[in-house]
Image (cartoon, rainbow, N blue to C red; front, top):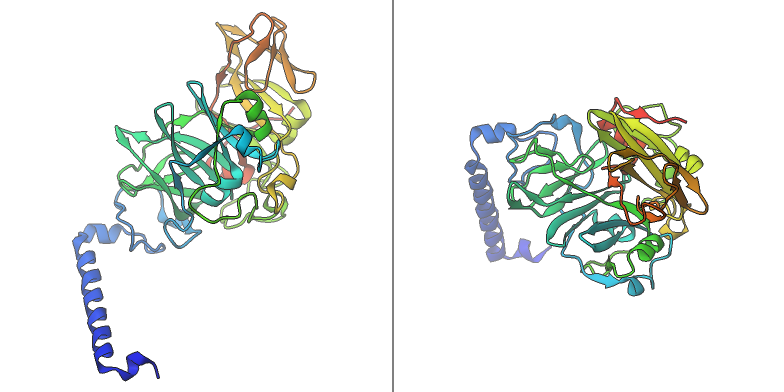
Length: 389
């Protein structure tokens, strides 16, 4: 028999604790109005949320639980940084990183770390940003953290929609869709976060372009197996993606085919990485906007092997507006990883920068385009136009 069962005093204290805890929880519930009680979703555990569930732009039935604990996957705020040289001791040339450059200040956020944290709240050149990665959708998107003058800090809610991470801000506990940056539930429902330019590239490419750049360090305060992919060969497994309940658009071979996707005007477009690898450069026009998409190899799949750096090469891609000073440019692939515009003969790199010739030093305007798994992008943008050569 336990000590509690044999001790009258302990038994009394236990009963007292249960009564006090019950009264506290009842009082906390009574703080909510009847309307607020009615707004809470019945299919989700929300007892520890202060979110205004009466403000919502989605059907709660679309939301599922990926991790039952808020902050069960801990985001990182003000991440420790290290030099290129120091990061090179554990990252390979092919290690995938999210590269962000603002006013000459460049940072790299390894997916080897974000795989385990999904959100890094940081500040670059005075701009507070949230660097986000959803492993289940292979979606890497960076957002500004200031909304209507309020600085927000983002965490991982544990909820999913279309298998995509639902973030929450710690100030209002509103819920946000990671792939789109849209507020779903709470005070910020219907609000769109501003996107900050970023690209998934290889660490070697980042180091070559930004030799003075800084890299998010493994010194996060958490004990995680950085560099190990807990999802195994997720990006090559057949069948329905993990925790995805929606329809699968059959227009590509696999739900987890990678696409570089964007919305331009009112048009959603997706460029399969298979086509990008084959052509290296694509000239296109979408919503009357001339575009160029550059592809470069040398990036390991973050989701293709237990050890990220051992995974196959998926490459990286960036999308740019193909006009400069009002003149449209058309591009062809040239040499090992380079490009040339046919109008001036200037050579360009995969970052949309002219590196020699008449236009040397000029930069094409970056378009908000990011890599995603096809099933996830199509779930949010079912009318997407798919590029085909």
